[in-house]
Length: 226
Image 1 (cartoon, rainbow, N blue to C red):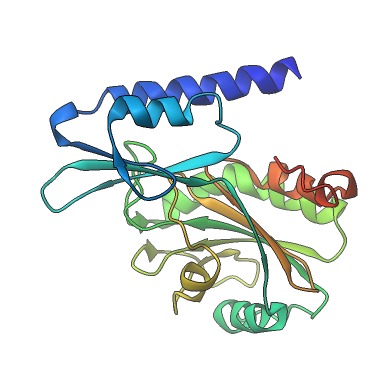
Image 2 (cartoon, rainbow, N blue to C red):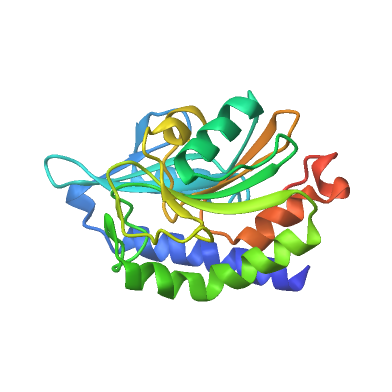
């Protein structure tokens, strides 16, 4: 409990520090209802409710920075076979109908960090795989019929390999972005989709291991997600 509280406090502090570092004259703050509010109102609404919300930071045409908030978790019922067919078509894989999908999704124009860009070179993917290879091996060994994949919004250049073991791909037809990942979020989102169509989306920075932990019946059945 103490560890979780410390992590949450660090995330909230980072969010506020990041927000305060922006120029007040060029900042716009959008609340959960899509209304423009003051910086003070925005931080008041967000403060103490970090477990409920995620944010998206972006630059407008007049070079102003916008910080917009939305819910961290979304639960949908989808046509699982439709998305599985799309995944198979896009990746040239043959995942069976009983596959549980765990997808990490990266958005175009994300301002997550100073290293963020719309180009994922082979070396950048390799560096990222230093972490995700370990996650993939662990969660797929612990969860029967689960497959972990990483997708990027159309418009991001993805220099992935042609290997049959590749699991980094472009959302070529933008189907995942339009149908599942409806709210662009700083530092990406995750999706868990079960064969019967129940799909959980978690917005904001996390790990595949944390997302997979939501499959625990104690969390899934009570909808107590992390």
